[in-house]
Image 1 (cartoon, rainbow, N blue to C red):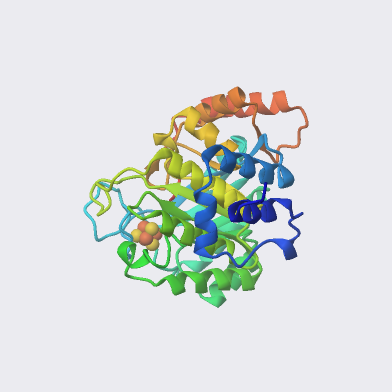
Image 2: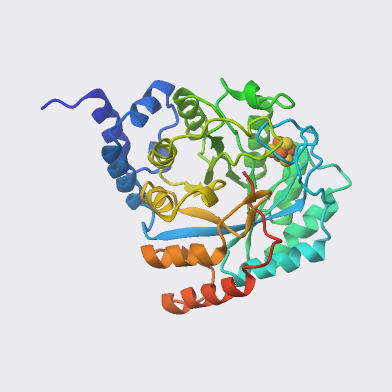
Length: 365
Ligand code: SF4
């Protein structure tokens, strides 16, 4: 039987050995929609096949995200409770002291996180903030953790300063498709976002960039967002796929739910298009049951945030994550120098129980 065009496309993606030169960077929206339109089981099989070519399918990378400055953001992202433009019940907090950040990072490491992400609700960091932020990066690095920051837009110079301080990753999401962008944010352009990613890359840091789905966008927007991400050269090392968490008081608080299968499809398509990236099942997990999360891991998600909150959105308790990992036989990508997986799991579980009532950890979308 002759192959259909969708078979030809998806097979050509799967059958390469995905050296960097062979990773596809010229996706069209139509090609991505073809992947979205595959029968669900075919899509999952193809995503899992690609996933196993590049990753241990039973391993998930774990990050912790701390909000180092909360609320009062001048931007107007319509999903965000930290925007000063919307009436939400967020408690504003100034930039945290460096010592407090390092204390939180130490706890995150004890809980098994390998990467510590620090997020500030800024349009961009000011010159007066940079010395503190740079000290945070250096201190977290010294603890032996990978470092990631999300501080808004960065100039070339700020990106170089962060790189010199030892920052490994910079997170800056594209959020949505270029076509849908103005419905979601008007205070910075899509091109501003691409420019920041360019500054991050040029400075020598790794890129964490993804988006949010369930904001009332269409399938074509989801396809277009993933095409934008996959066509970055090189592709982002981390790709957070967020399910909108509807925050009361924001303009998107009443938007219709995205069908769960459409969300899983996003993960699977992202996995196929960005075979070597960590695809992060990010905000929205607290609204997903264990089976839904398991399906996302099957679709190729291999990164999550630990902690009770994601910046301002709820996140599952860490011990729930450990319990789910145990049920699924998933190990965490760990920096604990210990080859005894049982002992690592026990160590994580013990630390999680100790820490489960901590409310200092946040996850961002
Ligand atoms: S998403 Fe970031 S930039 Fe946008 S309003 Fe929230 S904190 Fe500000």
